Length: 98
Image (cartoon, rainbow, N blue to C red; front, side, top):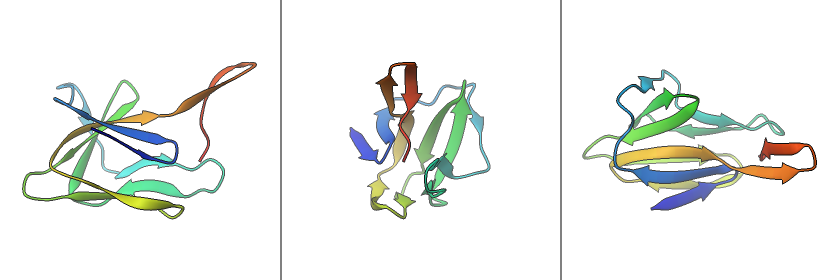
């Protein structure tokens, strides 16, 4: 299962790495161009491990990812990895700016 919102690709995973650290923030990415954020509601817990974000939607709930310029995405209970989209330019790879 994959979903995309702007420069984020969300992929369902079997598990979040056990060494991942729970984050206080529910922001998955900040827009470099607009300052808008991709943010999950309180029904999800966000984790980070080696600069990669993951989130878990708790049982018996759903979580919504919002951004002012994109349609909201709803996630069922489970565990997910956040992939920042990249693009190639002559000087190398860079993250896509949303």
